[in-house]
Amino acid sequence: AYTSTSSPVLRLGLHLDELTRAAHARRAQLAARALGAGARIGRSDKSVAHCEPGPLAATMSVLAHKWVASGALNGQAEFARARVCVILHGIMGSGRNWMTAARQLVKRRPNYKCLLVDHRGHGANGTAIPGPHSLQACVADVAATVAFATGSQAPTPSEASALLPDGTAPMVLGHSFGGKVGLLYAAGAAEPPRRTWLLDSNPSAATSSGSSHTAACLAAIKAESPRIYASTKELVAALEGRGLDAATAQWLAMTTVKEGAGARLAYDCDAVHQLYESYVATDLRDAAARLDAADRLGLVVAGAADHVPKPGAPGDLGLAHTHVLAGAGHNVHVDKLPELLELLLGPGGYATAGFTCHADDYAADWT
Image 1 (cartoon, rainbow, N blue to C red):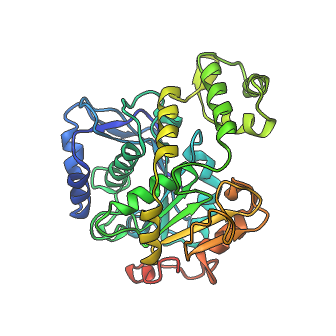
Image 2: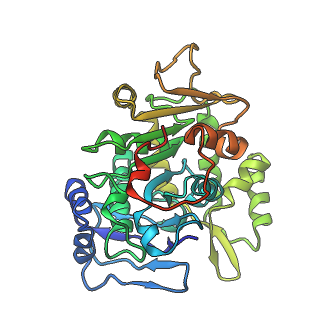
Image 3: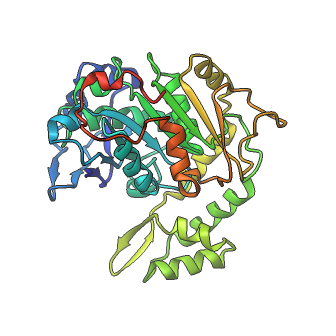
């Protein structure tokens, strides 16, 4: 079961600390009121909720997002109590890339619900969010989206206990680029998430590999974004013609929007480029070390990739809570999903029998 906010963003005129305080007191309606009369929330069917943009200029934006929750939840009351896990995709990805992983996660941890977002410049947000675009802007977006999606004005609101006392999400999973966004989100919270998982995400200022591949992808989507394609197959062929391998072309082709009888890529290429430059330039090793020392961080390193130094290798980050997922490529959630879930959830993570969603179910948040 899921609900989504897949239309252009809602724009907020609140500062990050103000929005966080509003979420803490279950006053995320403060954000909705700030939108003015131009904001409307409604359902197009029983599973999908759409949000239309309000009139204010943005210092942060409520992103396109989807909830994924377990079928074991018995109605809205149990959904409202379920704890929040935010999942942040990588550069040029989208929330839908994590749909399978999220469904499997909540099946194993039904007292959690997953919030999948599309970063600015990605997916259903398209070109709707103005710049400047940076990791810091993404963090503000995530805070705004968590506050709105759990607030009393949301199509499916949450209880205050679904978040930490300061309104922070209690669990964050960030892949690659999304890992740095999640790390910065956690580092800036009054109370950091119980666990922020960096999934093959290097907190250092420069990537050791993958830069040329990313540059090729950015060039390809920039060249092909203006065109409308009759089919996904035609788009994939065009991306392959730009020098991309078939798997990468198929992955990029997942981020499209309908255009008449065809489809086009849904990226804001300038925004994506700015975000990638911010990602490469930002060094968060100190923040990672502090969260690691507080037992609030976990790092998963893809064993078959070289985006993140492995323990004992040159450049080893020295984080105590580092786990190597043997045989996994950079997309760990695709290559080794069962093993990844076992690692994230720990022993006993697969039991769902007799589930009832109570606050004391959260005592051992994924330890």
